[in-house]
Image (cartoon, helix red, strand yellow):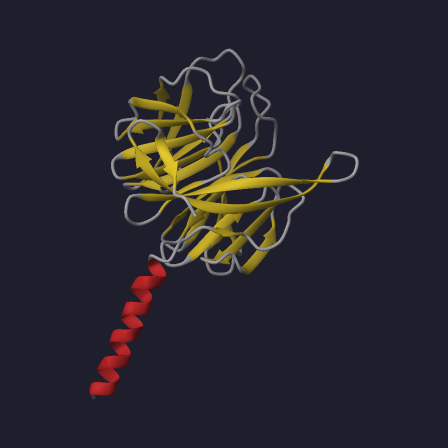
Length: 263
């Protein structure tokens, strides 16, 4: 009996470690298109969206599952055994009418496609999403000259609830990635330099910093985040022939927004 209890305790401790075992690592393999976003299941798996491929790895980046997906799959989130991916089959950053926005839903274990839901409200292209407190927030593209961003709220059946206005000023091509943690919403945006936005629970704008979270941001334990970094592999002609990516650890800093842990 003591042996059984000891083994059970070890397994429990292993499970706790696995849930908290995220660390800086690289995604196994290279991919034709660049990384669009990441999320975790909170239990030791990372999901990487490569525009036209969806990849599941363990915490060390070893590929467990990989499936082709429609172009353009964007940033993604995990909720209740499923992975949700913001997808645009049309054009981004154009006036209303050119986008074709959807959410694709996958089984988190097998990556089998389970469902897809139209998002006609995202008229500039659905680019990323997060789940929190019984709702999904979807973000996306933005035409030039629009000096605010838009956050689209849906219930868990993807019935549209409300469009929130984020008083962020213009950001290049809108918002690319989104994450929620500890009372704040975080948004990764393109730019030179790339910028990080923050809002409170009610989507009131609270900060903007020069920090690149535009290809992936995912909260983990201890107030930390995984931040994705994409590397383009160039051929002799100078054109990108493949992409690789890794995640690093970042922590909240009131002056800098987020700061990356030193190796």
